[in-house]
Image (cartoon, rainbow, N blue to C red; front, side):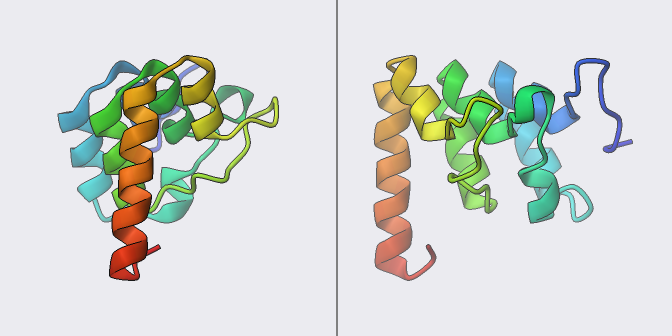
Length: 112
């Protein structure tokens, strides 16, 4: 069941994102029921979205997969931080670079 939430407020996508499990995250994102934008950006503990967790943990490939699936980079966590700001705070330059490249590619293609 994709709707199961842990006692800590995490969905399966939150857990896959924070732990860098790209295959699991991709399977969830490709599922018609779970891959809806409202679920991709669903807040967990401290209002953290899966994108917040992937960025904070430095999981570049999961971050890009979430962005491709439509994750909202502007969502704020309980402390008013975006996913990008978390990557910056943790000095995950590779994640920030990947986010910038994704944004540039999406803008050039008219997707963003």
